[in-house]
Amino acid sequence: MPTQKTTPEKIIKQSIQVFRTNGYYRTTMNDLAKATGLTKGIFYHHFENKEEVMKKSLQATSLWFEKKIFSLAYNETLPKKERLIQMAETLFAAFTENAGGCFFANTILETAHVEDTFLEEINHFFELWENALLHIYKEKYNEKELKEVVQQTIADIEGTIIVMQLKKQPLLLKNALNRAIEKL
Amino acid sequence: MPTQKTTPEKIIKQSIQVFRTNGYYRTTMNDLAKATGLTKGIFYHHFENKEEVMKKSLQATSLWFEKKIFSLAYNETLPKKERLIQMAETLFAAFTENAGGCFFANTILETAHVEDTFLEEINHFFELWENALLHIYKEKYNEKELKEVVQQTIADIEGTIIVMQLKKQPLLLKNALNRAIEKL
DNA sequence: GTCTATACACAGATAGAC
DNA sequence: GTCTATCTGTGTATAGAC
Image 1 (cartoon, rainbow over the protein chains, first blue to last red):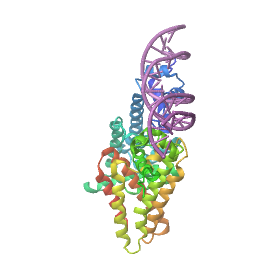
Image 2: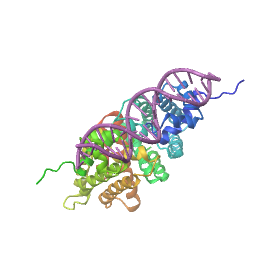
Image 3: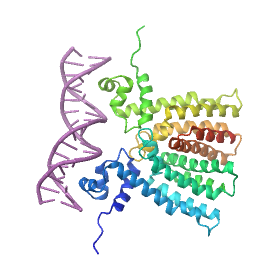
Image 4: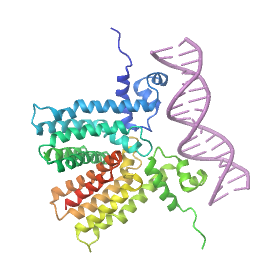
């Protein structure tokens, strides 16, 4: 069995870190190559251009959130409160890791005015999140309130991530996640 | 009395629009020159570099928010509810204008991981906003709750601006601002 | 498959003519 | 003061040797 060397999956995993830190425009193909220990030539052998690397990075991140966090909402063996607590804990880790904030929020603010390239991938992420919270809160609130509660919860968390990156206080995010738990 | 041509104030005013649309890194000195109808040469005659233009743009925007919006919080001739409503209306206009979102949130997410250059200017803006809301809510909440209510309000609005830029629905921001009013 | 060299465009910034 | 020309660095992307 030969050693797997540079699989596209590995490259994407490391590219996500670079994109999350530097943003899309600020990240160069050189940065990506260096981070993955490859040359630029080999990078262009695997991916057509930077845009493709970014799209794949966003998709892989969405998939990760879906499997590791949003799926918790549908774990029918646990009470909803417990599911929400588990989601909050994992979200906290994901959004404070490497002080990177939310990859999707970063990308939308950076690119939305310039191009529509990544709207689909970003939208997909927020829909997954919304659906998970709709499922969690749906017995607690009536139809009219439900949508607004979910939107406020996501907005509160995303806004807190912004302020957290300014003030460098992870506690702020803990508080925001607690507010989400108390809503149930 | 000679006609005033290209005052630094006018240049900054137009530069803000460009930075708000393209972001900091994505904006070139050429873009700024074109937007102001100047040549690159004359631009460098007025400002040392791009960083200086950005700092002055952030400072001018903060000053605008302070004079036009945050000052409303301290207008003792009106009941606090009325002050908050006026603030909400002006904030809505400011954050939906040219679909630009919040200049400060955009800048912090774009630059915070790369450099500390603009932290002071951005922090100043959020402090002004926090102080205005502390003043508005201080009789309604006890000391312990007050800080968290203010932080949640700002986070809710900033997070909603992110989602709004994705979904292109200004109504979302209206709802978030109403939530802030209902907290009083 | 992997790497080096390089084409080409454009960025920030400056020099110097007018 | 204003503009043009240009320097220097660096970006994306490709060509082609091994």
